[in-house]
Amino acid sequence: MNHLQASTQIKNSTNLTLGWLVVLGIILVAANQRAPITSVGPLISYIRESTGISNTVAGMLTTVPLLAFAFMSPFAPKLARRYGMERVVFSALVVLFLGTVCRSLHGAGTLFAGTILIGLAISVCNVLIPSLVKRDFSHQVGLMTGVYSVSMNLCGALASGISIPLARDAGFGWQGALICWCMLTILAMISWFPRLRNTKPATAEVSTVVNDKKSSLWHSKLAWQVTAFMGLQSIIFYMLAAWLPEILVSRGMSESAGGWMLSLLQFSMLPFTLLVPIIAGRMRNQRPLVLLTAVLYLLGIGGLFMNTNALVPLCAVIIGIAGAFSFTLAMIFFSLRTRTVQEAAELSGMAQTVGYIMAAIGPMLFGLLHDMSGTWNLPLTLLIVASFLIFVFGMGAARNRFVNSQESEQVQV
Image (cartoon, rainbow, N blue to C red; front, side):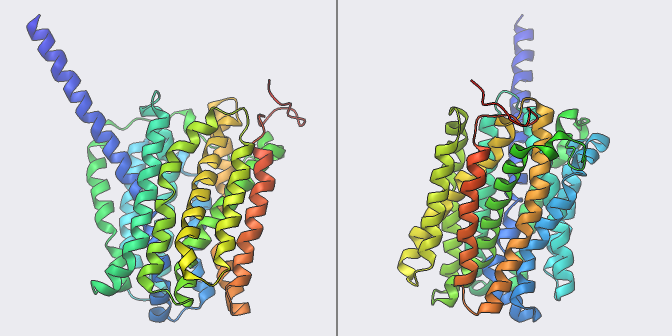
């Protein structure tokens, strides 16, 4: 009996250790999903001067990964079903490592080639990690989703803040500041490697039918409202990630301070990334949260029109809180607006594919409007318009209905 109890304790201890290793692996993969992108924004001026590219082309450094997200999202579940999620995620990390190295080589060609590889790799993780969390932590999906989101946003915020100190103060230059993130990818690869032995075939739960034009989702008004909400919140985030430091520098703020303002924006998202899904899931509809989101966006972005650097930290915090609301609402709509796991996967695939195509236009258009007008007021007006549209489409997406219901989509009791 004692021998049986000892064996049981050893088994439980081993399972607990493996469980923590799985959690660590997910955290490290999540840490790689924003940092390679948000680290670019503060370095735009360095990159532009070194490579001779225009503001419009520089904006594409944020646009290209988003196009890669939209392109790769439909293929990730298919690869997972064939090779297993663990192997596909590990392969994506290898591609991410290669892309980060390639991006940091001298020249505009390698800069964009590496950026494409980074976008493709992150896209695979974007699609598969939430499905893996649902598979391995079926009774703790909310908690693990929160941990995953916090890791992603925390490292994204740190990347924005330390880019300038690494490039200028540490003397690494923009290439060295970007290639430093290879270390984070290597850690994720090391943590993920043991899982390759126990890779499992992906289930039908991760299937995303995003290109099936016959699917009723493509004819659902509600599905398009969720998709538009997803795209608009992405547009705002990635335009600011690419250009906020540049805007602040042009108004007299130091490069380092401009980068830290982008970090402050992202740090302010962290507590609300955990709280909003819990609150939203308990509400009959999420319209009050959508209204609050739009108001916060308008207040924060409106403050950027005032040429006063003293207000910038407050504006960054307000925009960050709005961003946390809009991002987590977009994620939870995939579950709340569907009846089955398969519908949720299809809605997620549709919204991420179309939404990221919408978001990809933003940074490039932002830079183009600045080149045309010579000021930042016209590009910032674009953010104001996006905030109003978030309210319009969000109020529809927040109603207590299901996609794939009849077109009237009756409100549930």
